[in-house]
Image (cartoon, rainbow, N blue to C red; front, side, top):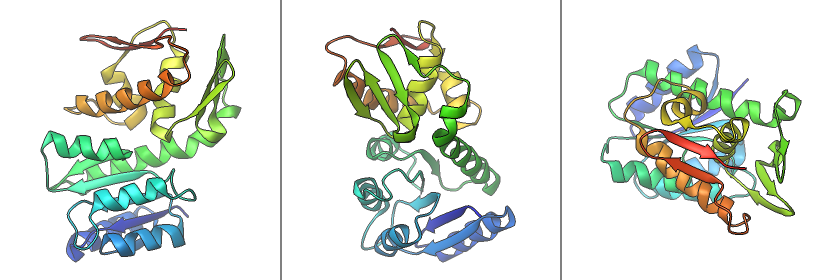
Length: 231
């Protein structure tokens, strides 16, 4: 059974999420602040963390940072919940490595869609070596087991979501991939106003690829359209 950790100091919201996730067949672990949440993340090693931002003692951003820095759970996907809808708050979350972001108030059905999309994506990656996809082309090799990209003799580890984005660009190398397609195929839902979501992740991905590219610019931004991988 897939285990999900819900961390929210609002007991009513925490319980609402728990009940609805259990109705979908998930095992749910609850925590009510960031300190307890991080401890349970380490202890339970959940498949997904649903994490509120504004909490006493340790807030959601701090807990997310600690998760990303903890080797044994660093790849655990995180969906952030917050009453803060300003763009810079979303950027802060994505800069930490949050996988998705949902602002309060939200419909529980929308949260369930996000949960299914994130779990589907992250659960598929370790198996992708068995999928009939191109994993090596010219100087680039994808290593799905470790979420890594190798260019010539240099290897760079990516986050799971960065790996997904690079893989989609890689499978379509030489052709533009639109922002709408990235949202649909990577995040698993129809395009909305989350253009900044893509921009932040592309910026982080490009910076990592540039470390091993020997000066070659692999990821090209097609302004007004999307992104293209040049090999």
